[in-house]
Image (tube, rainbow, N blue to C red; front, side, top):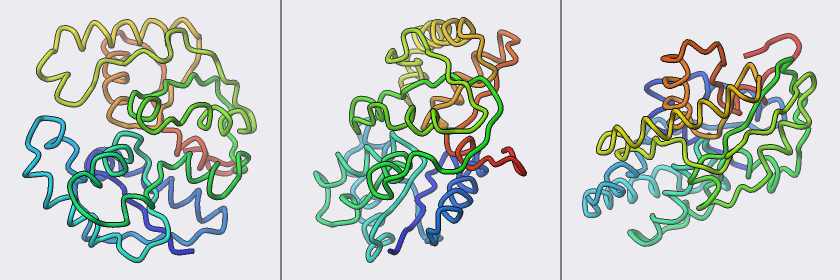
Length: 235
């Protein structure tokens, strides 16, 4: 099985530990992971902002970069959704169909929910819009979290409501975005959890920033970092 990591722009630039956590986790499960260093942006920012023609070269490059791999795994529901749903409309190729968000790969391909993780904290989970609505992740992330030793999963009110990030939406509609983020932060605080996790660091950045401005001690953490944690090494 040839597996490649598509780390995504935001993780590469701002949250490199998430990519490292994916490799740590998959190697613990016996999967060798390649990292093609020619990978670039999937084109989601351009595509969602209306620059469709500028997205095509990026989609073609993605196909060339990940050609020959059996699976491409990414710790991002939004980027996985961009590749799987929109790339086939732009270019011919097969890599898009072999691209999986991390929890899909674990549950559907490897058929595991207990990955041997240990995370002794109370956690609430926010399902991101692309993961929920475009990929249809449903309860895969929760099933993985429920098997983490030491973790107590707290239910989040209004979980399926957008956090307000939405990429350029947050830039073009800052007041609405901030109000949505405030609602999400309030519900997270109501759970009493010490950590909030998602499958997208872009949404987690927005949520974490909102919580920080409120002076909240809740830790924003990517799901991959929880799953990579063990008793000897909590991320």
